[in-house]
Image 1 (cartoon, rainbow, N blue to C red):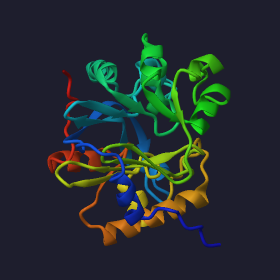
Image 2 (image 1 turned 180 degrees about the vertical axis):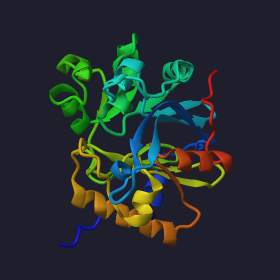
Image 3 (image 1 turned 45 degrees about the vertical axis):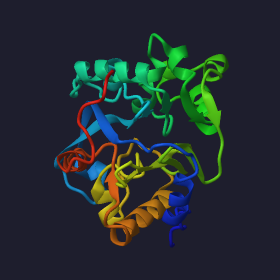
Length: 278
């Protein structure tokens, strides 16, 4: 049975990107606060047993007058909940710096409700302050209240009401140079993010539609038994992303959990390895 088509249209996304006036971001930086080590066969269907480092990240967009954070990383207790042994790599200084960046950000946006993307805000001592500048979709809000990714991250209706709620059908301009792309599949509330820097460099943050560039190259989904996804929807997204690799060779892909790809874009100078702190 053939997979459905994904709605993404790069020309439409570029048009939406121009809607919010203002200077585009001058830089994008990555916070790499932790990692999980998983066999490659769980990351990409048909893979082998090679241990694969899957970083847990957040991204910072730098503007002349402030910053925007895409996702918020996770505290150590939440990270330990991903491993029975609770002994996978974690970088407390990196998370402390991310916490500073969250405090200083003008805007924060959750790409979806999973713990490694939201816990940095949800477990913060200044939760209310951060929530009031954090954009979430109504689907994400529903998960945070009724079906949190980790029990300790469950929010009350009053708490989730502190966030900035949005709802959209296909694309949503987030800030100058940045567009949210609705991409349910990895989770029902998943989004991708298109970014155009002031330099003209275009970046597509695929978030968790792929865990590794090889998901895109091979058009093969994940095979982790603990992950419940809409496989047909994800295969359509992977097919679209692989098509962009050919048709848009200058488009840079960011993949949340692919350390090799993150190292590549950092070495090229597209992404900085240090968050900007005022």
